[in-house]
Image 1 (cartoon, one colour):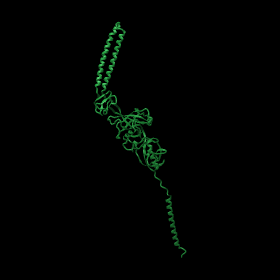
Image 2: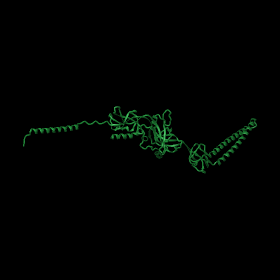
Image 3: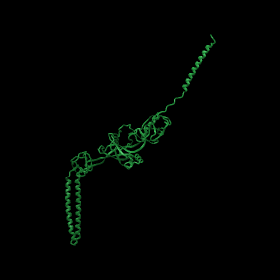
Image 4: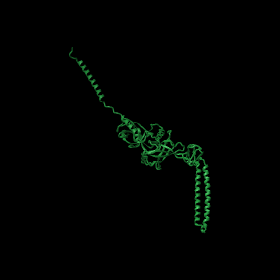
Length: 454
């Protein structure tokens, strides 16, 4: 066994050890590079932005109303007798003073003739008393008749004149009763069916109602408003029930029919109750609606929209851009250097997936509409899309009020209102379901909670 190496072997071993050392150093270098290389810088978050814009926003109150005719008249018999004629067709249009019914006239004609004869008799007696007085007066002046004779002649003449006056009044009464046997229409309108049959004994008692006439060229709509709406209208210098010529808009009324179609004619509020009902906290309001085609029928319940205010040049942003947390509502506004700023705002009414900003934002500022849940104040962002504001042709805000007319029953109101108040576009429409910043807060809070969860 050899105890030494040759120079060649020693040189070979040194070479192998050098190669091994180089391999170890290379592995250590790679490991150090892998474990100590700098982390890649994250890219700025991608967002979509849109400018805030201005628009006139109409604010409506929504109520349940009941229609009634402008005039409703009951045609009644004013004298007793048997009903002989009916001179109209039920359900048709009748004119004022048109003859409708005829009651048996025989007894009233006979009574009038009797009173007329009595009047002639009394007039003859009065004429005789007058002539007697004319004969007595010269005799009295010549002392050929006593004072008593003159006084008796004067008394007889005055009594006869009074009797004539009474007979004339009786004749007027008899002729009036005879005239009551012909029943005429007190106004122009549509008449109902008859309430009694021909040959029925009618009169001022229980059988007096013959028919009813409705004038519905103009229909009145009664509904109730809350005292809060009244106070808010006062803040905006809007007097419910009074027209202001200096204002660019008027508090007009729009109604929805039972088939969910909007009535083409608009009405105006012409009366508001001067006091609040303490039982309901509401006050009665009346609107006049034109009804030339008789589409509106008295007695119907309907959905009423009353224009309460018009916010002129209001600042509007998409509803999806707003986040609500415990500190309040805020949005992200992009600066010129592409960094974002958290801006707290005061919300106003909502409409059609948009919301009015009362304070905290100016029109034209760029706001983040998508991707805002990943942002922090001061972050730099990348704009993926510059959205153009979709400006609706007419911005409408509806404030829903579950109030019914004071004199309507609750069941009838709920049933008819549910038929008339179904929104044409379904439950998802923002226009129909939103009231104001308070009513929309619930939806925005849910949106804010969702962002926190993310």
